[in-house]
Length: 385
Image (tube, rainbow, N blue to C red; front, side, top):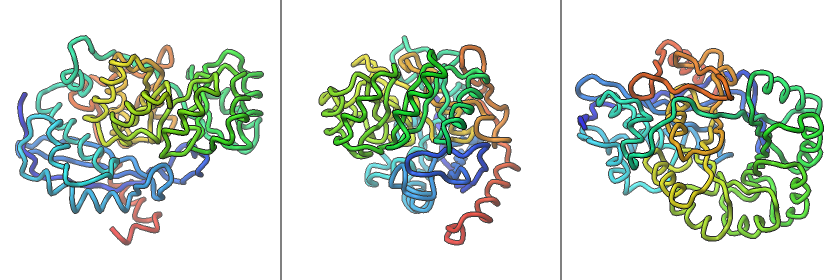
């Protein structure tokens, strides 16, 4: 493989307006914020990555502000001037820096893109090159759509109908105490055959087990992260009380976490978000563990721009990703996105893999600049940058 020498890394803090707000058990934000990472090699190539973050420590502990500090002052200096033959060398360079997985993931993703381009490979094929030979990427990826909490049941049902009419075949709904059983009942009555899952985003406790059992009657694909964001043990006590499979999300930050969760019986399905686990190197380690244990796997999303979406889609194209992933079409989130061409939902509720080298989409620099300006204008933390 052709190596690259890292000449510069630029960080772009952006804010993009969402087509629709996504309301979860921990609220909603008016803009999608992110740190876009632009890695430049000494021979003129550019790789792009994305740290998908929020302005508040809600989904995770990191925020735009904390991640920018860690990236700019600690992670980026570790890479400047380094000659890399593989992105798998990056975690060793970051070994002295603990935590901050979202910050790590964005920078590492840019290196994956850069090296894939240097070797004239699609990112999906570059991932496959780090796996056994029978893990050839698929050209189309099955996807679903995530729908936030609406003000009324009628509004919720109308939005589900809209997504089904658009061609999505797997629906994920956000739930919270007081917005769960009656919601699932209404959806099943209106859409008896839809593939349905519920995402709690850590909104319940083990004391709610009897209440959560009421969801078993609705033939759910899974219930995602019902208990605390940092819990594995109590999920292992909840799972045997439910007929519905439990999927873990926020609790899993490494392959070791997932191995522990499987050993304890804390979950039977995994939502793998590369940003949450520190990047694609760790994601591939988790992928290999899922192959070894025959664990159902899907790739989650953090409302990524086209940069992060393209990279996640490449990961989701690998054959052991067995369930529809949360990587919806571009028009579900942005109009326009900062990359071209847009991702368009196709037959069978699927997205096509880009054909170009690396992430396979073109970053529109004028849109990046517009999104940078929007961050400066609308974010209260902007003067600190």
